[in-house]
Image 1: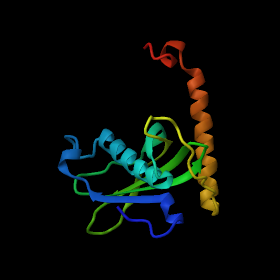
Image 2: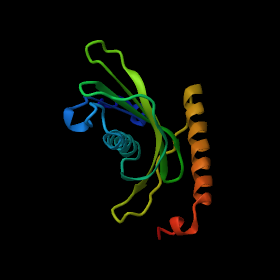
Image 3: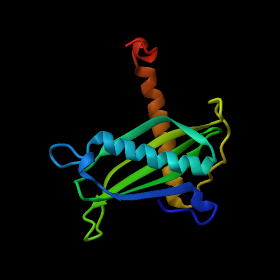
Length: 167
């Protein structure tokens, strides 16, 4: 993991490692579940550093597996805070992978992960506000809010039994 050098860098975290045989399926490609675990871990580190708190995952949205990650690939996960609420943090994670010898990595996946900072009793606590400054940060903040609205709308579509946790 790279370490932040100033306060603004606290909004970003990068993990890099090689995809090991223990993370792949019979076809030699990384399991989707393993990749989702790496995404959650990287996003958690980003949220925890930003908030200086223990955080819990609230949602993972708009994940799309664009291309496979193969055993032996260099994998780079880059997480950054793109928006905040009172207690929540929207973290965008982009995943790139490729041959470590060439150093050429291509995007394989990206998604948004929402975390809430909590205290020792599990009660949500306020987080520092993230104010997007660059055009890219502003675009990602709008994207995060669009995904939030879409996920909220999907919840409204759920059958009552599913929403209540009965099914």
